[in-house]
Every structure is written in C-alpha cells, then in structure tokens.
Length: 182
Image 1 (cartoon, rainbow, N blue to C red):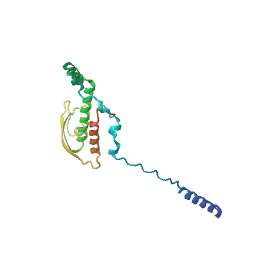
Image 2 (cartoon, rainbow, N blue to C red):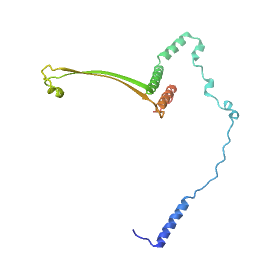
Image 3 (tube, helix red, strand yellow):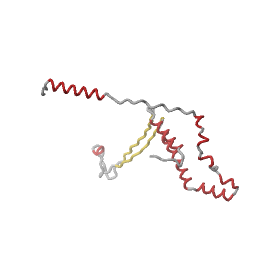
Image 4 (cartoon, helix red, strand yellow):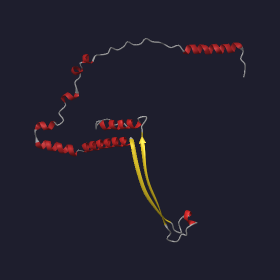
C-alpha cells in the first residue's frame, strides 16, 4: 500500500466531504395548491351529461308492434343464434371454472383399488422365484392386489385458493361481451 503525502490525503478527504455535502442539497419547491373538493349535489351531472341509455329501446322492443310473426322470428333467431349459444357456453364454462376452483378448498378424499396379474414362464424374468420354484412352460400366476384410501385437508393459510375462487367468480360475473384480457 502506498502512503500518500499529507496534502494529497487532505485534498482527497476534502473533495469527498464536499461531494457528500453537495449531494444532500435538493431543490425544494412550493407545494401546489389543493384542489377544492366538489360536493356531489353541486355537480348536477344529470343536467350536463346526456346519458346513453336514456333513449335506448326496451329489451323486447319488437313486442310493441304486436306482430306474432315478428315475435316468432326474433325468438327463433335469439334461441338459435350462434352468439347466444357461445354466450351460453361461456356461462357454462365460467360456472365450471368456479366449481373447479372451489373443489381445491377444504377436505378431499381419494380411494384407489388395483389388481395386477403376472404369469411367470421359462422365458420371462422371474428372479425372485427362480431359485425356490421350478418354472415350466405354463408357469404360475402371481396376483398383486392394492387397495388404498387417502385424505387431504387444504387449510389455505395465505388465501391463494380464496383468491382463485374470487377471480373465477369475477370472471363469471363479467359481461358476455366484455373485454377479455389474458
């Protein structure tokens, strides 16, 4: 390590101290004036804004014409419309998503049963049996049965499953023509 002369060391320290002090300086500006809060009764939005649904026709507007043929045609079109079928499918899919998200919560039980049969011949690998049992062409059958029961409890300490269910319910309540962001 090289020892610097006193003056060079002092200059370096003063330079560092000066930079440190200057870095603490900041321009402080006056805060802008607070915006006055408007009382909702003072806004009078209904008189200022023309609402889009004020002149909108009724949901079943064609019934005002009292024409049975028009009623039949529009009802048939609504029932057989591909967009209506797609909307029904989206609703069904949303309900299934909610049910699937809810199924991960709480207690889950499982049961399993299996049977495996194995025939040992003189051509097959029969290591466990080859030393103690003679194997002929029609060797013995060995059966393995398995039966099991299980249970799992999902406690959901951090609320991940509850959030998943809430998101699925929100997706279900979203309007059919709404924006889908994935």
